[in-house]
Every structure is written in structure tokens, then in C-alpha cells.
Length: 307
Image 1: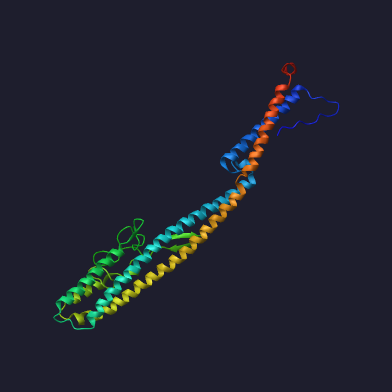
Image 2: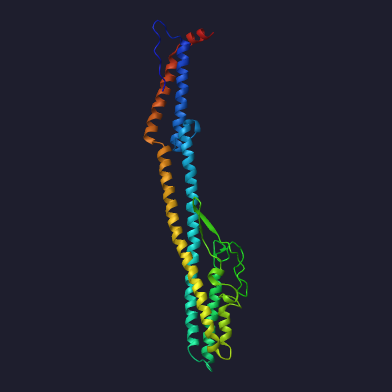
């Protein structure tokens, strides 16, 4: 605000001195008004680094941390989506496999010689299970195959061979911390003749055995292979489920960090609106008073002095 210094004893201020002092005060008031108006408009106290260099440096550090935390939240949330989809898919696959297993058990435990209708029904059930598993193995999330590793192509060929990559997508969810959000299809459905899918897989082998001369004898050894493959699928589901739970924890941690930083930054730079409004009013009043004072100076005296 504009202030008038007290003149030294024996000295009287000249019109030029008074004018310069008033103009300087007006300039200060204008600058203060502009700063306060900018703060009120933006809602923050740091609109120019020069306003407070030390606070600006601290703000930039915290803001960088906030940006990282926001990225971790985004990564973890996306990872949750991947893992939830993968876990749900493998749980569905296990349900399909359990139905197939029961069908195979029913074959291996009795003679089906001459029971063509029963064989046809069980074969159809296993074939339907194979189709369901094939569809599940091709599940996508956000346009990407979740069981192809980092490949953009379907995970299996027609024979049931895994053609994806061994590497899988992961998400960085904390400093130096990543979590895999998928597993290779080979770790979930197997591959080739020991896998579940395609024309060379275990389910196709079961269908072929059912149509042989002695279905019971032919199917019996395949039951063990099926159960071994089911154990692989169950283990894969457990892995994704554990990663999903971990990802939920990382999401919560990153979100808490993000909120804490937002609060700290807000406390640091958010404008105290009532206080800023009061200061702006005072600056405006000082500015108007200075303008009035300038208007009262004798223009003739000032011109004579300056000439």
C-alpha cells in the first residue's frame, strides 16, 4: 500500500518529490492488485516462479511426485482389469474342464460296447468343451489377447500349439516394482499334444478315442493326461488370482499417496480466498487514495518545477 515518508527536519518535500513518491506507490498498488487478482482467479498463490522461488521449488518437487503417483494409479487400475479378466476366464475354463472330466470318468468306468448313442453324446460334450476352451483362450482385454504374451496374434494355431511369446505384459505400480498382468497361454492351457486345445490336444484325443473300437480302454489313459492339464490350468488361475490381490493393494497404496500429495500441495499453494479478497480491497483503496492525492497536487507548480 502507498505510504508517505516523514520529511527530515528542516526539509520540505517538493512537488516533484511528492509526485514521484505517489507514482511509485501507485505502481506498487497496481502490481499488488494484479498479483492478488491473478491469485484469486487461478486459485493458487504461485503463478510466477518469482513470486516465491523456494516455495516454487518445493511445489515442483511435490507436483512431480503427484504425477508419478497418478501414473501408478493408472497402471495399477489397468492391471487390475487385466488380472480380473484373466482370473475370471481361467475359472470358467476350470468349470468346463470339470464337466469334461466327469464325462471321461463315466466312460472309463464302464463298458460302452454297442452304446453308440451314449458315445455320441459324450463325444459331443467333449467337443463342446473343446470349443469353449478355444474361445476362452482367445479372450481379449482392451483389444489385446490376454494369453498371447506380448504378441498381438491369437495364442494358438489350429493344431493347439502355443504361438504367443513367453514374455507377458506387466505394469509398474511403485518405484522399481512391476507386476505381471497375464501369463502365457502355454502356462494355462498347455501346448501341442500335452495341451488341451486344437486338433492335437488332449480333448481332441479323447474324442478320437471315443470313436475307436474300444472306447473304455482307449479313453482310460487319457484321463490322467486330462487331470494333469487341469492342474496346470488351476495353478495358472491361482497365480493370476494372487497377482490380482497384490494389484489391488498397490492400487490402494498409490491412490493414498496421490491423495496425500494433493492435500499437501493444496495446503501449500491454494489461495486463502477471504484473506486475498480483503488484501485486494485494501490495495484497491490505497490505489484510489494515491490517485486522489496526485490529483490534488498543483499542476502549475509541478509543471514549473519540472520545466
